Image (cartoon, rainbow, N blue to C red; front, side, top):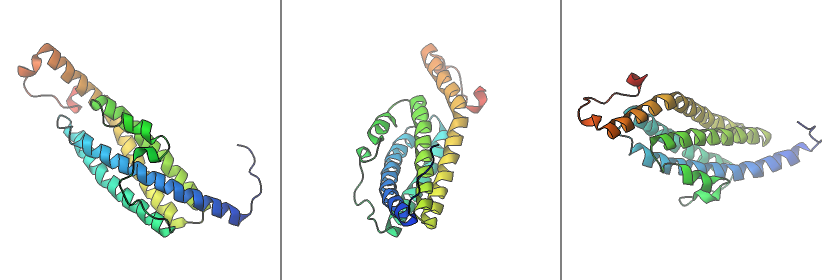
Length: 192
């Protein structure tokens, strides 16, 4: 890292606060996109009940995260989003929206895992910006959202192998016509 130039503390706080406000709006848009995506995905995962349940839990977390971000913006005197935001409103949102929730469970798992890491990077940025802006409550709230995103990313990472095995089994059963005669469908855990 290059050496940081000397800057006046007040100037740093002002710049940090301006950026923090903008980045909070971007994060709020990101969470709105996550809510829309999780709602779609959770409704289509009847064959993966454990994954479906965890996505529903994360959907509830995500709604709370969005509310917390609204509170952070109010705390900074910034207006919360009045209408449903579009993914194009934040950097990379259009590309992410094109990938999320549009394919089979495997594609959704991969892009969902990547999106969790996008959210983690966003919240790490917000934590640092809030600290530099002298906003300890905003920093604390962003840390709380960060911990939830890290937990979801870790959980998804652990599930990818089992979901992949279950998906491949299902595809093979359909191809061989075995699904009618095979009896009960194995779960992701029994395919290890």
